[in-house]
Amino acid sequence: MALDGYNDQYMSRQAMRAELLDAETELKLAYAWRDQRDEQALHRLVTAYMRLAISMAAKFRRYGAPMNDLIQEASLGLMKAADKFDPDRGVRFSTYAVWWIKASIQDYVMRNWSMVRTGSTSNQKSLFFNLRRVQAKLEREAAQRGEKLDTHQLRELVAREVGVPLADVEMMEGRLAGSDFSLNATQSSDEDGREWIESLEDDSDQAEARVERTHDVARLREWLVTAMQGLNRRERFIVAERKLRDDPRTLESLGEELGLSKERVRQLEAAAFSKLRRSLTTQSPEIRALLG
Image (cartoon, one colour):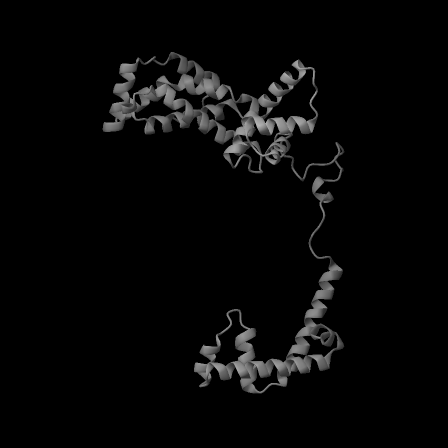
């Protein structure tokens, strides 16, 4: 039931004019849809309860979502309920549909509240929709006792009341404190004001660090090339295949190619590394200090 092109007032008027189903008619329609996939029966069942969906959607307007979108989500929840409803259970469809409608609306509200995902657990979801109500109730009760709760006390009481960790309460308060802001928004009303993104610390390497790293890498490459020249051809091959490849080869595969045992290849590798170490420490006092 797509609602594109219809405003919420129109949908409300249409829903109010829909028929009211008695229990027997509702049951017949539910059976017709479940057993025969009668789309006319489904349409009649869903249309009859759109007033329920719209009424529930209206309760979530305070979260800032457009009413038309809330009704759309409520209607999706209603259709899911109709698709999954089992008339053999002896429950009225309206009672069953309430859960699906509410869940669909809540999921939509939480998806669109912030770019940061909100309420990924059942505890957080409960907090999102009940935090303000529970806070107000606890503050009223404290006032009746002649007490005034500070922020920390209120958070602890909320956590105990809802049955969630204190950290979840603190996190959700931050989520509900305000909506998202663009990093490209200016920090003042001035057109030439600095954007917020300009105040973020740049974690990337600065030019000086990049130049130093490039210089160091070039020096290391020169030292390594010189050291490799002190190895014989077989040793250079083993070192290159074992240490300079993205996918290093095993001692066993090298042994098969060279006609040597796995242990002999390991010995040649160790001897090559020993030669490289001596050559590198000879070339630079810095490397000598690093290699000990």
